[in-house]
Image: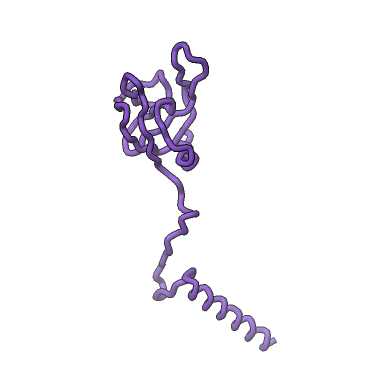
Length: 135
């Protein structure tokens, strides 16, 4: 039995040495907490950039994701804007054009939503844009 305990201690010690050698485990003074940065693949995705692409008028910023929401500002065409999340909302339609777009983007760093219809964002970046929390 003593031999088995010795083998277990040796295995644990070797595994610990391997973890320290690989950088997964680091030594610190007793009671000190250390955190290693997470690998890039584990980091949460978040705000992305988009470009306003209106043809005539500025893009209206709404208080919530609907054309019925209060107008709280506007953005000119060509502006690069930071988006914090995407959400379905009131469907945005253009008179005389069938279909519509039900998605809206929450602006990062300020209040308001803009319809996704007039914001160009790279499709790969769109996949990384989180859904807005349900309210």
